[in-house]
Image (cartoon, rainbow, N blue to C red; front, side, top):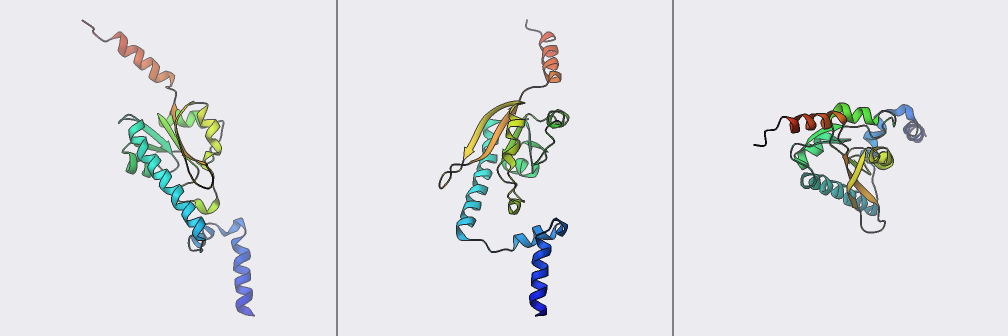
Length: 173
């Protein structure tokens, strides 16, 4: 009886928000179905391939913003900056200007938080209004979901002024 109460109590604790990081740790060890495992693996491979594609679609000196910047640098060899998964929509533009991001890479899942069903594309419209979507990757199979997107951010006024100054000082003779 005592063992059953312990398991019941632990289960109740894991269902609340007060469980902190322990919920994420225990979620890692849960057994998932083969179908779910295949879906997660395909999604992760799609995102990895998307990050590799960033190297082809961006300039070598470009700065790319994503939830997990270490993966950007590792897989696309681009400078990277961190952005929140759920950003404050009124502060997105200031955040990107401050970090001097040239591109934003968004993905359906965060590479380390898929147990929470976090959808990193919920902010797509907010980021896309600051530039243009230049590439997206669709998962083929059961559902044709967009997995990741690359957005080119419009140049800031600072960059435009800098370019204008360099044109005026260039000697064309």
